[in-house]
Every structure is written in structure tokens, then in C-alpha cells.
Length: 297
Image (cartoon, rainbow, N blue to C red; front, side, top):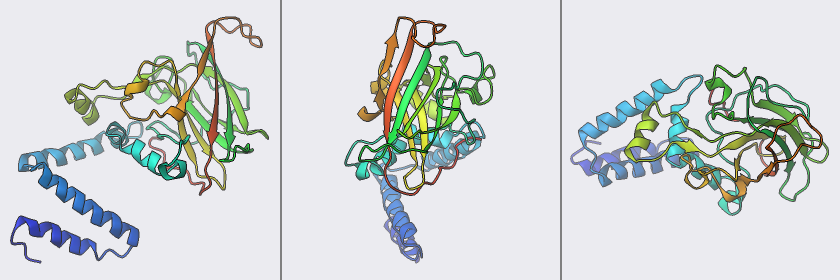
């Protein structure tokens, strides 16, 4: 098609997209072109702004490494990650869900830990946390034999791959649920933290006068054949940034009660005060058990 005016460009591209063999890819590409071209017209995108936009995308690619994923960070900061998650879970967005963002710090092959064990692998000062969690199906029945990856930041707000003072795989562990669907472990209470701001996402937040903080949370990834893999984050109910999470990930269903205790622990007399307990239930939906691609190595 010979282009005679700017309106012809969209028609020409759509005609090509219509020839895409795969039906789902065809649907996605047709919608992408309509919305992308519509966006360009809606904001009257200039040539200089277009060149800047392509440079930003290139920069985001260069910033992504084995330990940092700028693309995932940007998707969360625009609310896209949370929207995709909520649209595809909880009966396709009709009900609450334990599903949440994977986040940019999940790693494969976390060390296996027996129930009741600790995931603290190096000197990590902070209040002790004793977590007891259950995995159930949508009818509330316990799911035994599920594998659960757990990971979270330290009380200084850093994951171990960001912090040379922490041992490798500190505050990470893989558990197996018992006959009652339970797993339990000891750790330290995590702290909220700022997302990395050294790149494109940081400049966007500064331009919008937004803070970079995520509320404190514990991650979990639950795998069991016959169920959709669950990725979740349980947020601390006492965190001041629950209402303003920079990644838009907090839902009411994901706020957990981190209960504070100021007396001696009945089973661990050496634990300092305060110490905390967390009880939470994860609900799996039926589906294909397929692990996501790790955002970092």
C-alpha cells in the first residue's frame, strides 16, 4: 500500500497484522497497533519525543542484568504488573486472590528447609519473625506436598543479592506443606525498602514527585501439579506505605497481621523482644503448574 497521508499508515499496518497466522498473536498485534497509533495521535508525539522514547527503551535494556530488571521495575511502577495479575486470577478478577507480583528478586534453587527451620543464614540483626502459613484450594481444603519458595528483604531493606554483608541465599528457603497444608519457619521481620532509582524508573518517579518505597512484605511462590503456580506477597499491616506502594501491589487480601509480642517467647527463651508472629493462608486456583522465568539469576 502506497502511503498518501498519515491516516493511511495505521490501515496499512493493520492489513499486515491481519495476516498473522497465530490467532492469539493476531488479536494482540491488531489491538497493539490500534492503541499504539491512537496514543501517538492523542499526544501529538513529536519527532524529538519519539527519539527520546526509543533511547529510553534502549537504556532500560542496558540496565537489565543478572541482578537487576529495569523492565519489570517499570511495569510495576506503571501498575501494569498488578493489573495483569488481578485480571488473570481470582476468577478472572471477580474475587479476591492470594496472587500478587512476582517481583524482580525471585531466584531458582532456594535451599530446602525443614518446617520449623530458619532461613537466616548470616548475621541479620532485627526482630525475630515466626511465620505459620497454610496452602488450601478454593474450597478451603488443605493442599499437602506443595513446594513453597519464601524470600524477603532484610531489616535494612535489602535482598541478599543487593547486599555484600549477607550470605548467599540469606532469607530464602524452600518448604513442603504437611498433611494439613501447613509450613512454618523462623526469620527476621522485613523492612520496607526503596526500589532501585539509579535508572529510568528513578527519573520517572522524580519527575512525578513520587516516593520509591515498597511496604514490608514476605514473598511466596507455591508449586503443586494440578494448580496454577501462585506468586504472592504478604504485606505488613504496620507499614506506613501500605496506601502508597510505588508498585501498586497491595490489595486488601494480601495484608497480613504481623503481631507484635513484648514478652518472652514460650519456646525460644533466647529470643529478644519485641518478636513477631505471622499467620496467613494462600489459596490456589486450578490450572497448569508452570514456573515463571526468574527475573534474576
